[in-house]
Image (cartoon, rainbow, N blue to C red):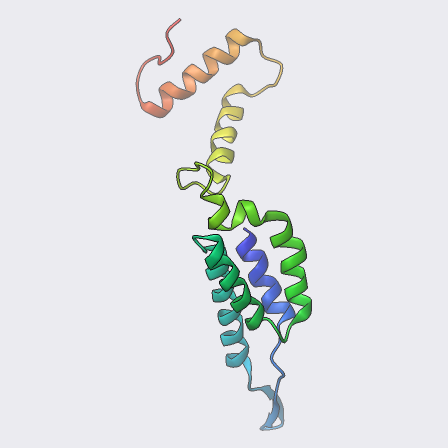
Length: 151
């Protein structure tokens, strides 16, 4: 999700000076390809930064990222102050790998499982017995068997 956010900011904040030519009476921008390459270059530096396996490599990759963004101070300031300052320990592999996460670095799986449980429970006012039965029904349906939870 943050990767999409960063890419969006690269597209809007990091512009190539455009050369406009007139062809058959119509203006045509000839630097679309340069802009696309610039976006890819900066985003590749971003991904390399985020995937840094050690703090030492992170420091080197940060310098490379800053160098790739040197002509776009607004974008670089945004990334350093908004994303890296706030989420570096959760986002960059050098810090994230210090915590057991079993390869799951997104909340999508948890959100999906939570949604399924909420569908089965259907209300937040149920008592423990009703909730137990509904979750038992959910597990039985998911695993294709009879009752899973034994009283």
